[in-house]
Image 1: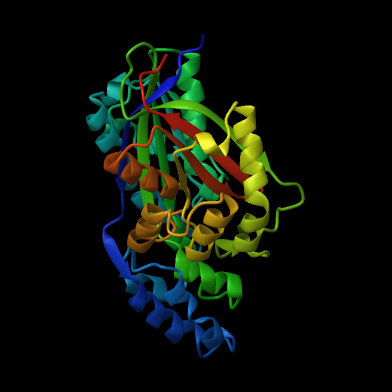
Image 2 (image 1 turned 135 degrees about the vertical axis):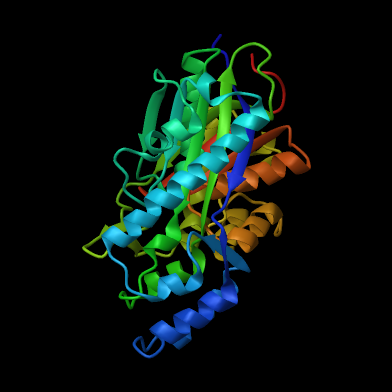
Length: 354
């Protein structure tokens, strides 16, 4: 029998500058309003997202001036490395593991381009050993934290006793675009924040920790490339929201999750808590409907959204950390939607890994 991976620790980090939602809304009105006739009709999105504040690597005034790839990338490299180190050090300390004991590093990020990747840039600062294996992952978007956890668990299970470090780092605010006068860009400006989450996993007898990874799965819908993603142009990344995600989730997520759980030998009745990526207030509501949950059930998700905004990949792990710290459910299913368009799920249970 394959030894299951244990989640030994889970930690989070945010960049230093607070971005209150009312100040971001005022800046957006100042910069978009005179040039975009539809802005006032859309401005309520800053109030309806359920976000009170977000965090970014620079003060709010930095975002007023036009930026190109060089400026965005320079901040991504600096702030991304700092967030990687902070989240990773917290997770390793909580697990009682030194950086030199890490055997494999899974780094998830889709909001900047770094070659060498972030774990290589943080290598000496962290104190990783020369023989550590690096697995950088790009392009998973909001599903990155969940799929990254699945990848890290499979790596741990493949080599019982080895230590796997997962770090998801996203700097979504670096994609704020004042040159794109589109509905999708206004929504992105109202929604996205920055953060990082890190986890330590190990498989083997008496691994202990917060939970055991029971299984994972994905569902990708064909012909849905226009639901979510990036456009790439000389200025930077530009968000793709060609189709509204909440109605899509309401209609399609339930059957997809049923299929994923069925492949794991489970049903929704056996899940004590779905922990969902809070992509926005309407997305959270859509997930409650799709999963047949009581309205308001995803309360922790709303709290994460309120405090940090949608940070893309790390956000679901922020919610998982709060759920596990409050009252760990016997079985939790971590769920997120990302570009592809894909639903990614990981089932976690209490008890020792076998």
